Image 1: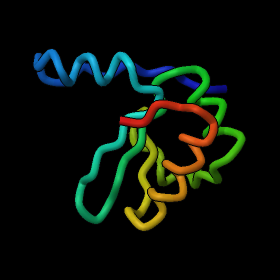
Image 2: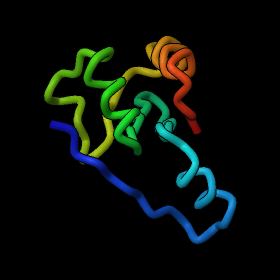
Image 3: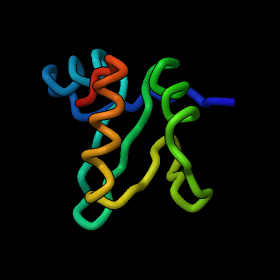
Image 4: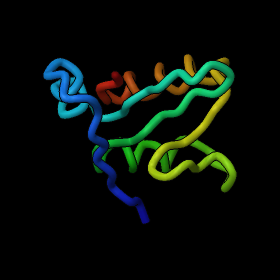
Length: 84
């Protein structure tokens, strides 16, 4: 069962608009990248397409190595998800 999250970032209007419009948010943290499904479609895509170990879950986000991100983003975009 997917848990839907919403995240509040800084009060910057541009970032708020990106968060509202995006299905998936990406955060580069250096050696780890976090991706956060924000919509039901994104949660469903992740459940169907991504094998996630329990240690990868950080609150509503999922941690992965930056080298894996290109394939994840490509798959999400092929499924017409908006990635920001």
